Image 1 (cartoon, one colour):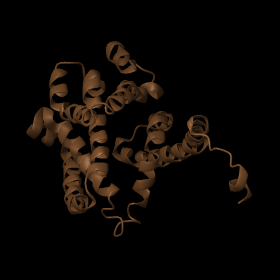
Image 2 (cartoon, rainbow, N blue to C red):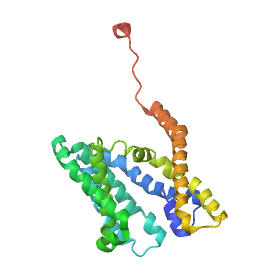
Image 3 (cartoon, one colour):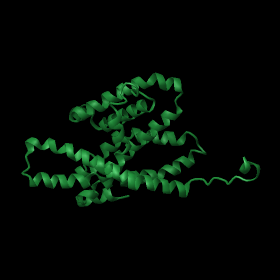
Image 4 (spheres, rainbow, N blue to C red):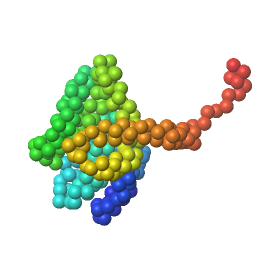
Length: 249
């Protein structure tokens, strides 16, 4: 749970290990997650309130690390936990809103989320100059709105084929994220060995993305899915064996 702290202090991690800093943030969050859920049995609204406060704490968390090193500004616990909490809030909203209200809000959530994410991706620097420490909150809220809209079927009929490829990337996003550096680093060395032509540097992104996707597929097929099945077999409830008249039927 402290690899991010180690990298911030030493300014070093092996390249293929660098993505693991995010697991430090996630594991810390999910260590507390079951406790909050258990407390929800005694105080039903407490977990939702805690997650909402964490989700909205992003500007304060960003302000706290304003003078920290560049690595810690990227990998600190506060902003990362706030972002995860925003996702939890989106999931809670998806299951607690009435279907009629959700249906009315879905187009607004979809377009607002698309606009927010699009503005940040087009020119995040301008967004930072405008919103300051609230920028990460703006981005995560936009992502949450977009996810809620897609969850409720927004754009599914019209854009099913267009969105098929992004959906596959989404489904394999964790596998791709955790393994992509095993593609990126060899491609970087190959780029340097061929003369580092920066004019055509963008061309290297195409095979890098394709190979990263393929590696994610392999990780999903031979590691993630077998691990999921094994965990479900070990932790899932056992089915009672039928007996008597039920067995005869």
